Image (tube, rainbow, N blue to C red; front, top):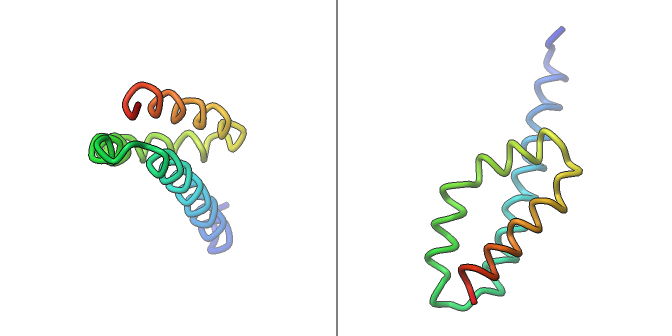
Amino acid sequence: MINKNNIQDMLDKYERAKSEVENMFKNVIRYAKSSKMKELNSFYDKNKDDYIDKMLASPNKKMSLLSDFEEILKNKAL
């Protein structure tokens, strides 16, 4: 049964996942060379919803997401 508390709980989980994903991307971007900032920001804008969905589906995916971001940093920023 859906009620006000269930909806608020779902919204809270979404906001936490969104915040974690945003913070992970910010950390990747912070360490990137400035010449690649635009490329990384573009990647984030295109993919953030997918990463938020993954984080919501399984908070344990955080390490997997961080690995993805490390690859981005290696391949696009260095």
